[in-house]
Every structure is written in structure tokens, then in C-alpha cells.
Image (cartoon, rainbow, N blue to C red; front, top):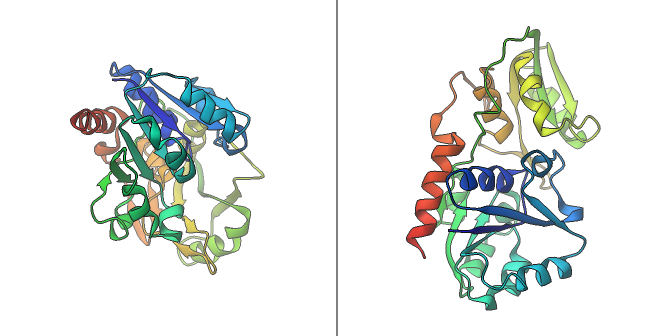
Length: 265
């Protein structure tokens, strides 16, 4: 089975396509250049094709002429509508902000003729999408694992600049020796993240939904899961976690994902 991912969300599509290809099901990702993942997952896995515009991306997909057996749209409703006429079995994956901000979109996605299943990436999203399947977010455990490096006696929190003060106020109740980093101004490439997450005592996982006012998402982020895979304790939603949940292993996730897709062919 050949799978085409359209759009990417924080590298999730690139990670998934990488492992699915390893499991014998060639998969690639195509994105519009301006929406590429900022942490360069595609550069690391070499499986993401960039198009300059949405129109170019549409033409590329139209000219594939049956080269792919399944399309997965990642928070890309506009293109899911535009390409629905191709009659290729397709899935739609909600990653969080889009569905939380517009719950009616779940119904609209399922009205598309060739959407055979919908996925959500965190359990809290199921309340907006009762019939969706949970896609357990994958972590590349060949890349993220404990390293023999000296850990600094400090905690780390990575967030966007607009949330720094909110994160600092939350963390101050727990620990006053945590560095809060602006991920936009101090962007770390994906391939360098394991070394960073291995070099700290703990990781403070605080993720906000960009609403007005913003609210804290009640789920651990992918970065938090990656920190656990590195053997780094993670504080998330007022709880400490110490063990990596193996159901997030990229091989386990993608084997289950492929079984679901092949069941819909």
C-alpha cells in the first residue's frame, strides 16, 4: 500500500511516513512551502516534497494518476474538499487546534465522499469527534533514547514567546530552577532534540491552545513523549511521568495505523 500525506503538523506526518515506508508501505509527504514544519522533520527523514503554492500542490496530486492507494489529510480541509473528486480512499487527521476551534468541521469532513475514516491525535479531541479513531502519536525511538551525557541540574520548558509568562507562572509553583525557552527565537533542529532532552534534569510540558484567552491543553505534547523516551522525567498537567509509554513507539503506532488503512481499502 502506498500512502500520500498532505500537510504536516509538527512533523507527525514525516515521522509516520518514515516508519510506514520501513514497514514496506512507501509513504511520502507533500506540503506548501510556507506551512512546512519549523523543526525540519522532513529534512531529517528526506520524505517531504515542498510546493510553492496550494495550486501547485493540487496539480502535483492530480498528476500522480493513481500512484497512491490512500491519501491522509493533516488538518487540511480545503484540499480535502478540492481533491475529493479523485475517488482515492482518504483519511482526515485532526491534530488539535483546528478541531478545538471549530468542532463543526468534524461533520463537514465526514460528508466528503472519499473520507473513509477520521483520526484525532489526543483523547480530549474525542469529545468533538465521537466516531473518530484515536491515532496514537508516534515517537522515533531509534532517534529518541537515553544517551550517556551529563545532565544539567535544571528543568526545561519549550514554548512560544506569547506563552512564556503563562508557563513561568505555572512552573513557579513547582520549581524555581527551570529555563523557559522561546521555541521561535531559539529553534532547535529535530535531529538535535534528543541531545537537548537528554541534557536536562526534567522537562516541563505545558501546551496552550491559541484561544482568547488561551487555555492549557490537557494532554502531553509530542515533545513531552520524546523527553520520556530519552529517560527524562516529565511534568505535565500537574503530574509527574517517568516511563515512556511503549504504545507511542513509531513501529507499533504505524503497524496499527496501516492495519486500519488496509481495512478500509
